[in-house]
View 1 (tube, each protein chain N blue to C red):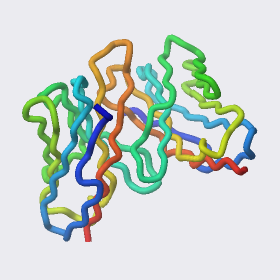
View 2: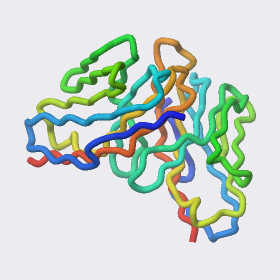
View 3: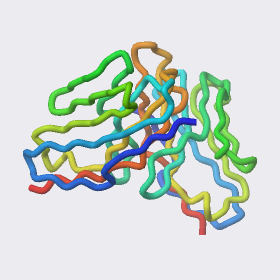
Length: 112
Length: 115
């Protein structure tokens, strides 16, 4: 089955700096890669996703890049703000959205 | 419709008791999923429904676990003879059948503590 590894497990940045979180996946059949943000006591919230026919996708301060050959994808957050502090999860699936395999999460702390 | 609702938010039970959780998905979403999340880990897939049909079950879903979605709307997840290892956050999510939109919407979860 699919295995998703995520790094780093914790990340602290100064407000206004950029943050990068990286994930690798094992199953070459995976073609859908979402990122979720989870705040304390809440369920994960989808913040951006990318499909394998696209190399990069941006939404305001958030971007995701995908390297299918190397089987890795990354989340980039620019101009970080304190409200970006949360746990971020990457995930992968084979696109039918029936089952996502999640990484172990990154605790992002944005220091004011 | 304000999103995926889960009830209860918290449940404390004694080992050996049965518990049942409810999930109300977004009304127009045909697909419904259950995941389990333990502290410091990402969610793990348990089972998936398309309308009322249960199409996939994880090996994590032992015989003590059963899920239903009787009319293709809300779903229940029952755990029989609970064990301490069942303590976790149980998350429900839903999604539409839409080739242009694969994204799930998660509920806030039910936190189960088995004592």
